[in-house]
Length: 172
Image (cartoon, rainbow, N blue to C red; front, side):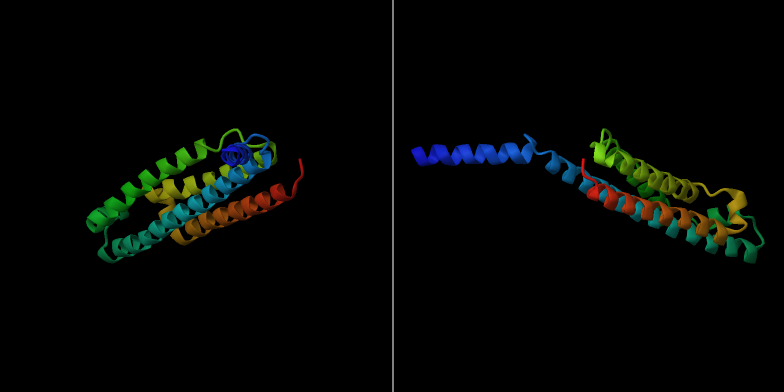
């Protein structure tokens, strides 16, 4: 019986350490993993958005070949798969928004890094909005628009990665 009581005491001490009783480093490690995961999810969804935007080249080429405007060509080429992809993009954005809400009130070490994640999210949001409703003027030079969106995404991701690295090295 004495052994079982000691085992429970050790288990309770271990659980207290893991769950946060004096485990600030543990909470910071979990927060860092959440930041990293959120960054990867945002980049993944932004890449899907860029892929969708690149598909607009096909529509633009079809519009030229058929002598119609872009809007007419887009309606003619729209499939149920396109509609489903756009719906999924909206659903995924809602999931990302929820994920980011869970990252508010960061540990001091990661406050600046959260700002970098928010900048990455802004780059993603530009891609997302373009993919759902491409601005007419951007369709004139889709290549430049995609390059600009992609460049901003890559810069933001690199800044987040550096911020995560720097925060991990910071001692507070």
